[in-house]
Amino acid sequence: MRLPLALLLCATALPALGEEIWVTNEKDDTISVIDVATLEVTRTIPTGERPRGITFSKDHSVVYICASDSDAVQVMNPDTGEILHDLPSGEDPEQFVLHPDNRHLYIANEDDAVTTVVDTETRRVVSQINVGIEPEGMGVSPDGRIVVTTSETTNMAHWIDTETNQIFANTLVDARPRHAEFTKATNELWVSAEIGGTVSVFDAATQTEKAKIRFAIQGVNSDLVQPVGFEFTPDEKTVFVALGPSNHVAVINAETYEVEDYILVGRRVWHMAFSKDHSKLFTTNGVSGDVTVIDVAARQAIKSIKVGRFPWGAALRPSPKE
Image (cartoon, rainbow, N blue to C red; front, side):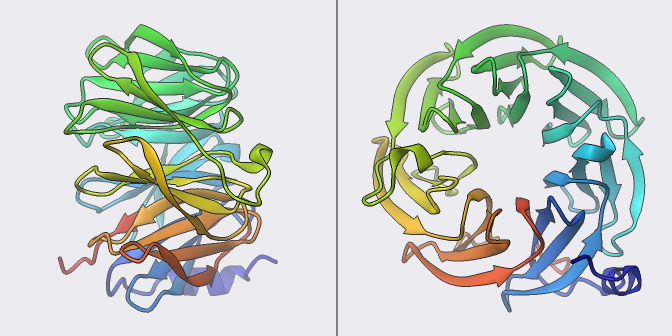
């Protein structure tokens, strides 16, 4: 059930007091804001239709939201919840990545088989790059020279030179790649394959595969093990991987590529965000409509927080005082 508009608008006027996790609710057209200190929802903010991807600017002064069914990337003031304006995102934006220059957004347009590059200052489309069918995942290298788009139906990672906005390499991955992240220290690209049930690791310099990680959870059918989002610890020695309808998060040793542990969370876990000190990990669980809080050191779930319907994306907003 949707909250009354008056209540939503009232909630958005509340000032941010501390560190927060922002969660997009795909079927409620809202964002749930979780206070990291109290582990409670403090605000519910209305958005465009079917919000999914979410990320903050480098200074956290604005938040970008993929309103997929509104065919827009919305730019919001996080203090007030006001939509400042929409960016021309292309059709059905699902995920995006902000370039290290804090200016250019690279957006996966699932229905159009393109990656759209938008200048957030001029609010104009810089380029549209043809990629594979149903693009979804987006990753940017730490130096900003490479952006990768994953295409779910083509089963590829497309490597884009950000100077020319041209594809310079394509690499095959397993079925339905969803998420992509570059590492800093080891210069690797990690890509999850939802239907393939794997995470592939590539040498970013040569675009060659270094490792393929598989999962096996006792008592869980292998068909339910579907890797989607993942997050690295700051030292990049550990990776937490959301495994979809298996209702577990895997813990991987990023140096040996071995799975060390599995953590039971809510139903159909999608994406995750760390607290600022990385002591807690927050997972979005689409089917159960909640967020699981994981104690990172103990590798245990410590709380479930009810949010909106089908929570999808998650992003950290540090305390404005910091």
